[in-house]
Length: 265
Image (cartoon, rainbow, N blue to C red):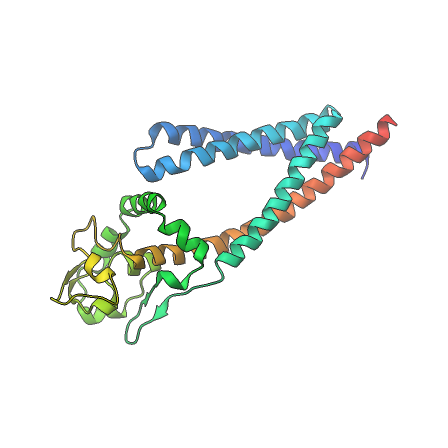
C-alpha cells in the first residue's frame, strides 16, 4: 500500500471515528445531568469514558496520519494493539462465563424457571453482591417489567397463564416459584399457604406488593443472569465484527507507520 493511500485512508477512518465520538460524549454528559434513577446514573460515566477515549485516540490517529507525526502514529498503534488483545481476551472470557446454566423446563408450563446455582460462580458472585444487586434491582423496578407483565396477563385464567411464554426476568422476578405451590389469583397476586418452605427460601421472600414481588429472590437473580447471558452472546457477535474492523484499521496503520519511516530514511 502506497504512503499517500495508507495515510489518507487512516486519516479518513479516524476522522469518521472522531465525529462518532461527539454524540457519544454529548449523550453521556446529558445523561449525567438529567439522570434521576440509579439505573440511569449507572450508565453516564462509562458512556463519557468511551466518548473521550474514542475522541482522543481518533485525534492521535488523524494527526499522526495526515500530519506525518510518527510518534502519534506509534502511540495510536500501541493503543490499537492493546484494544485488540483486550477484545480477544474479553470475548473468550464472556464465552467461558456464559457457557454454563439454563432455565429448567416445567411439566405442563409454557415458561421455564431459573436457579442461581446453575450459573457460573463468577456471575453468581457479581450479581449476588449486595451493592450490585441493589443497582440491578433498581433498574428492574424502574423499567416496570413486572407492571407490564401484570397488565399483559391480567385477564388470563390460571390455565391460560401456565401456558404463556415468559422471559427469564418475568419468570424469576414477577411471579413466585413453582415449588411454592401458591394459589393463582392474578399474575402478580398469589395466595400463600401456611407452610414453611425450607427447600426454597424464595417462597417466604415473595410479596404481592408490585414494588417487591420477587425482586429479592434468588430466582430473580438467576433470571437476570440468564437474560444477561443472552445479551452477552449477542454482544460477542458484535465484538467479533468490531475486532475484525480493528485488525483492518490496525493493518492500515502499520502500513502508514512503515511508510512514514521509509519516507524519512
